[in-house]
Picture (cartoon, rainbow, N blue to C red):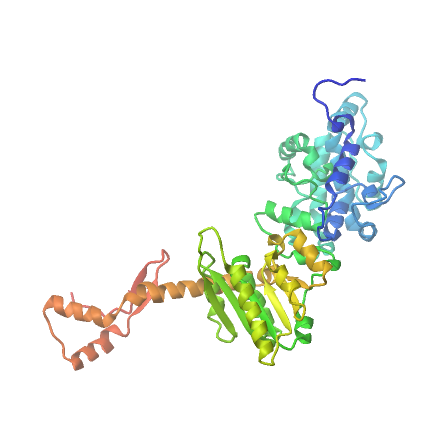
Length: 493
């Protein structure tokens, strides 16, 4: 048979097979990618009504299921979770088969409980067993969609217990509720988008989602789903360490590493590390009383990096050596070379002095420091990096060589507001004190006033004038940020 015109494999497949093919191709992990958990996506997939076969259940269940069967069994034992799942399954089936359901209702005067080819009877039976009687006479499909929205309202919140506290529940909750879903018009608007971009919805499930062809299968794993979910809510998911398997060599607590160490050197690459996150990890090390074993912290900076590094440099309690590199070429930094040289000199010098460095921490997401790790076998290394800024090959190299590493993103997210507040406040105070206020000298102002008015004051008069009138005044800031004088002396008109 010869086929002409536009043609694709997908055009020959029904919706179920297309969803299956899509899930297979988009669930293939990237080469050398860290193994990601599927705990969250398995729970979301159950609740939004993804077919049981994708959990490895049913006779035609996948031999290589996309979701955890144990999660299906856990949630399926809970009445509230079953109700939410059944309602979502029913809503998706109605939307997928909307025209066919309307035809049967109008021509054959059928209801949704008498069209098993379009509405699987097990959905309605499960709802009935759990006390939800949704079938009503003379109901249109659009009426059922509104009813399902209203039924979901009291039951979805009862499923929050299945989502870990470190995931923002409100973002998960919003998946179940279409905007203005309690109205027919609201669902019609959402349905138009669903019908046009149905293949971009996860397993073609009808949920509150903004489709984007760049997403692929958002339920591939937790590392794919949570960043996409947070991005849709104008937020960012930082704690990637919670969505990768323990086998990727990532550790949550640096305590054991420091306990085994005698003398530690910490090397910080200012160009490939976030200052707020580094300050966060330093605070955590101090809280855990681990800083005492740190012989030196080498901080190598570049003129193009953030001024926030000042906050770390001002910490006099840290044995910190700060070095600013110059650029020979505007587009080429020398931070990694300078840091490597300074690091190796410190290792060599400490060994010559009979007080060797036995452990080292590199805070950088740059894989250029791997040769330093590989060529210094006498030193135990730990790497602190950011999940999104590190290549997959570097993760794999660290894992294959049993080099422990920590995602420092979580330390930033835990104290995000505190760190931002502290850094911004320090910069504001510095700018005020070194900038506008640093240029003000009240005695010079008094002398200029005397000269302008052609008056003189002796030292006693000047000291009395300052103490009585100038010293009590203070500077405050208005709502628009302007500086004003307060406690000004009352002047005679």
